[in-house]
Length: 287
Image 1 (cartoon, rainbow, N blue to C red):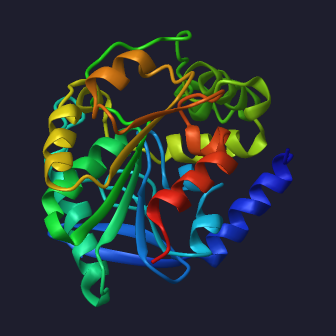
Image 2 (image 1 turned 120 degrees about the horizontal axis):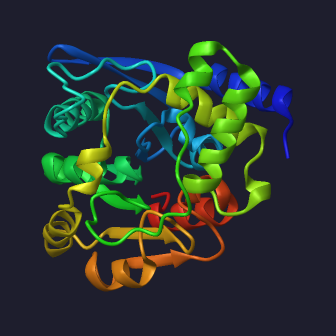
């Protein structure tokens, strides 16, 4: 389990290994962090996230793949979508930018790009797959938003912005630790210095309001169309994911294409990194 200094060093090393690609689409620029060589796979993070949501997954995947990890529009280093209104946010401009930028990245590729999305990024990935058509290959969603079903709240999130505004590092750390426990991770020992560092950096850099979109539904219809056309679609939820009820999603969202990962919470690819990495490598293949 890394301490704070080790966590920062790990993030710095991963950042140094990345080849950044800033792709302009329309009036916005999206930044992709690129690693490895091989069949392409694009990773899309969750709400209040960044490319660092994949901090424990990039290197294992990059051993076999070209891994393109987005800061989605309105997150991290990427521009906010033009006309974005946090009180009435729309997913369409964000999908336009992500899909358009992937077409640029895919220009010299000989095979479709696989898409892996987490949480809000899972809903975005499903939209992007539909938009790209044959340019999109396999689709894997981890704890995706947009299912429209029951949730299992573990407690109330706290507002970390007060501590950030006061530059109170200890209060900010405790707010992030609390919110990780309530929403993102199941086991106490999963809430380590790396998880806190990633969550803190990502939250502070978030300018896109995803909550209303994430709760509005629409995922099941997207996946039904996708599966009817191309069965290479899989959905994985953590057993203890507070954003969904496993029994409900197994029955109502992509029946027959859903797996429940035991012992982990919402941020499945972090808390269950070893098992999720192995599962992703198996589903994505290396051909």
